[in-house]
Image (tube, rainbow, N blue to C red; front, top):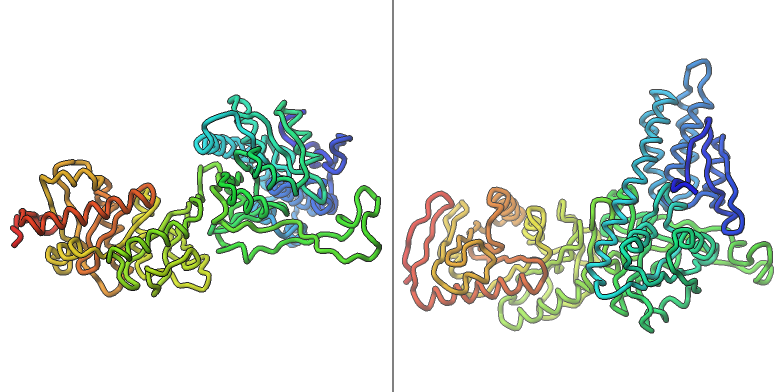
Length: 548
């Protein structure tokens, strides 16, 4: 078959009726809005990207149906568009696609069709890009052998319009000779894994085995899974992922066993207007889907049921979300735990006394940062707040407020590739920063001729210029100063002073950020003890001043 699962022929949407697979490959031809809505509701068409594009074609059909003698009835078309959007609530792609073509309705049927065909072409391109990005990350995280990958539900060309997302990544890995076999969850209750994914993998010639959903954790425990690859129906701003029911359980098991859990989806599946997964409406479906199968009752008559079609996996259980743009959300294993452990260590050294100081780890377009007003010697992983890098706003707080210095962290993340920031108050560095401050402006400390300079991440191993920022009472103003400075000085070393307020260091991970902070404190101690000259001044005019 052709790679595309959706085509437009003579005024109708033509696709595969997924209800007949794998035993019957039958064509489904949809020429009315009601037929499109019914196909989406009954899962004849399913998969977030696929139902989005199908919904857009539904608007094309509505526009044609409501055009008489060249005059389009715009209110009638928009009313049909609203009906299409409500067909399934959880997947964001449906509303996204319909909204995109709504903007073309006033221009007529041809304009709506052109926009929909553009989306169809885009879907194939973005799926291939996302799949290649995901395959690259899989091989980075699991480099040692042909891979045993577990997948859930169906994420191939049936669920998109072409190539697929998570299955697309499996196809890329298979082409690279990197797949040993794929373990396919059957995906209760409608068996999308058993009926659809196995069919697509067989068609692609990828080795696979089918298993029951409840065997997945045991497969991980017995060393049969190197990586989990799934798709998504919606990804919120903090990295929470709505996907087919059973995904959350897989993420929990993968985290317990230290196995990468990767989500592959197009950008259209991301919903940055939703802060967290708590806002997602999870669709519940008919009782008959779980009280029987294929017309045969398997439960007593009138048994009450709980039948959610989806669940929501917290972003901190997701190793990475990958789209056509690359990795857009990444969560190191238990970032909150790592932050709390480091905070307690630095507290013991006296560098985070009481509630002072804060630490963060970047997780894609969000960051996990220590909560405000908490003793750093008593922090746990539950005392962290997830914030947006874009604007420092909290998107997951667990009842905590983000640290006041969060804007310092996000300024660093917005201006460079850092993945961890440590802001602490070690005595020698804090004293040097305070003594070298230039009131009301950004000053500079230049230190030369110490071996330790090599450990600070600067370009010159023999000399380093360290900015000293004023300690404004309005902390976001400090963050704004830092952001401007780093934008103006893209080659600046990954450390800075804040007068009377300690130091900030950053790096590719927490260990590197901590090491740079330790190195800076040791260097400042040497300068203090030896009385060696340093240079203080403004960015434009650095003056030689000896320490006494």
